[in-house]
Length: 338
Ligand code: BGC
Image (tube, rainbow, N blue to C red):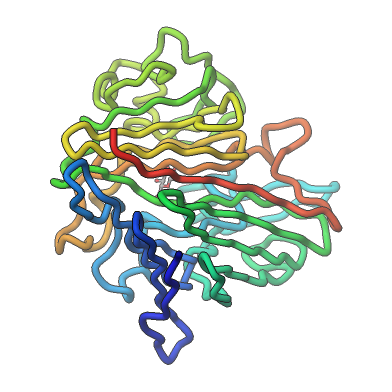
């Protein structure tokens, strides 16, 4: 049984909901479909919040870290804030140096979505008009959050009336500990043989690097901090992990564990890639839930998506959504005890 409840509604259409069952409690706001809290039990059965977020809803209007938000139209960076589609070049807003990041000046993370409560969750819809942030095509995005026992799922669905570019993700930062220290002592396992390389603006270059014998090999469970400061050009370019891992398999591709609390998170996704971001720039953010600005590396974002900057680097870009086609993707987060 899932209890879905409207907690609060503000005059400007912002609504807060909770979704709760015996295992999980999740608090969500329809601005950017932001997940504000996820409460899960530790090994002693004590529930606490395992994601980072901001203290006040007003702070989300100016949130450089995209805490818990749905990202669109296009997650991560688009090089030189421009792309060409069907022979036409589209200019975007450069909000990250010379590049376009996470949808631009006002991405989906700041948009108010319509909400429909479901028996086991919430369904959100956002209509992005042709030309919004420079992108072509009227786009409908449907995001559905559901709870099923100890699993939380995100389902993405989109359609367009003209060829366009999409790459959706959720920008949840996890910290499974009860102390909210840096995530260096969390353990991560990823079924992945390649990462996408980035340049020194964190822009995906389209080049793939085999992870074997590099700090990027997480095929065997590894402490996040083990190689985080290793002397590797890719770690230097991104000030830590901020890379797309190309996923193998279709289930249980990622596991995050925190041995002291005993919490384990297993992620299964239909997305081909996960962007692993160790909060390398977190300390420039706003006041967090704990009443202070987060330090770098106090959370790890595991963003399931398509390859960043694909529109500029891939021969047949995976991020093109054609008129009449439907985009669909699903990510499941299972919270367990180790
Ligand atoms: C990106 C980082 C960026 C961060 C912003 C992540 O998805 O990979 O490079 O700084 O989002 O919060």
